Length: 118
Image (cartoon, rainbow, N blue to C red):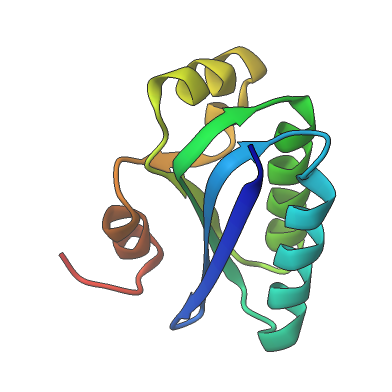
């Protein structure tokens, strides 16, 4: 299965929606796409919506951690949302949930960053 990457700017936040598999075959595509979008508008905040993601390996974890580091260095905030149980377990094992907030929906993540009101 391949990976689809959809991006949308909402206020000062880049929302990235992933669908498919984020692995060593597709990680570089995601990294380049997200970096390009962040650089284009100098958007400080990032939300990665993982609702459509069916698989992720360590390369995917690296992409997420790399974007977290970049956004943090620029003074922005990053969150993950709509994470399925399998990915949540991977995040628990890797410790990602200790540094990144995980929200049940994109709307809740946007509200936390301050782009929408609930």
